[in-house]
Image (cartoon, rainbow, N blue to C red):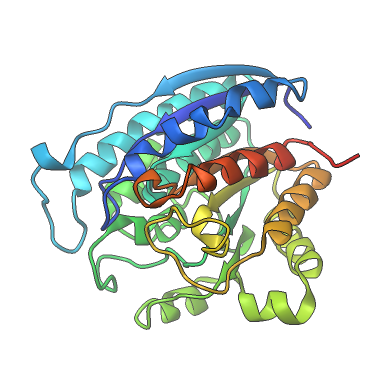
Length: 304
């Protein structure tokens, strides 16, 4: 790994989701022993706490096509600054969600730091959903269905232009892995954007190793590192029940770990986030415990 220090940052935002509860995700992941177990791998861990997030009960919904847009922008801008600071000080950011809209802040911060150094990043997005809606195509107006579109420069300017530039990542350096639930209005966005998109059928037919190696090739083509955005709903609900938008037929326990191990072996991982852990819907913190295990595999934990 390039980094000996991990900067843990909590982003307890649920403004972008349709169901409440993911604001408790960072606490659930920490409760599952995240910091201590990363330290046991030999890393220095700097837990920077949680960023401030507006509460939905005290906040107007705002635009119906992009609910809580001003507050989500403010949160992502704060997160971006914190992530940028961590990367600038040679620390690898590990961001704990929160709903997936926090990825706009994470990716913005990493991309900004690399851009200042004359470099760029790729993104691997492991998710049951494409998250490539825009306000024009979203059936719900929930921003957690839009963050990847924003990262490639499509969406509200407040979210695409954080740090004053867009896109944050070239769509040809983006790979989505594990797709199995894409809105009909969103399909065109995915097909036309130029991202590499791998459905569960491709994983079934080709195997995860083949798919992930190809995804890494896309994300590393001409880039200087890869950010991993991992939505816990990419894993089958039998293993990760505590998510807001569960979809049957997801990654198995071992497939999820294999994905993390392969990414670690690539030596290209420069940032990571784990999102959409919802303790309200979980069983004995099972999903958060799995999230911690997967983070450890991505950081080098092995069976032998």
